[in-house]
Image 1 (cartoon, helix red, strand yellow):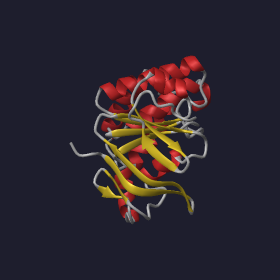
Image 2: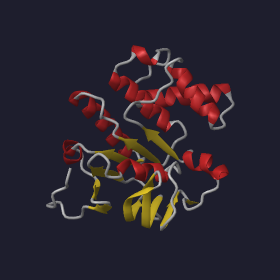
Image 3: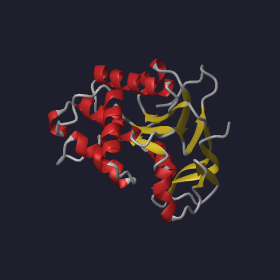
Image 4: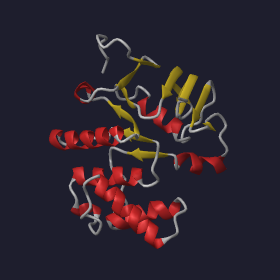
Length: 230
């Protein structure tokens, strides 16, 4: 199998500053991968490089066949349709219902048929256990429910991978477990998961490949006995 995300000797930027030197990382179809480290260690900058929010100026990088080095602006929307992104703060549009939030994304990515849109919204809401919440406004939902909607939004275009940036950071422990179990279930159905976290308990309870970011570098932790610095 070919990796769906590939970095080789890549310098990862945050703004104009290099935060990780010489990143080597391959994400394969169906992987469950954690990127862990302290705040400011460059974890989120890796995600932003994958989505072409951050430029890649040195080394190799590609995602879903798109070269991240000098990717033309016209290609970025097509790259982003291959992946789903889940944020810590949900980033739902507060002035519209759950259904309208999801419809907005579908229409922005080229969907036009009303019947197909309604069917897809129903599918993703059922997939995250929120089938009865389409009419709700975001403020009427708990934090865990909002995050489930955010995951549903990430699933709309059937991505090969979900990039989850601290998706449980604003949730209590029980709700965080529910969200993690949902991501694990999605992974078991074939969707790769790349999750940024600084919470050791998460990647100890839900095993996966672990990349540790520390001292301006990021390496895969191969030996399970190695202590991951957080």
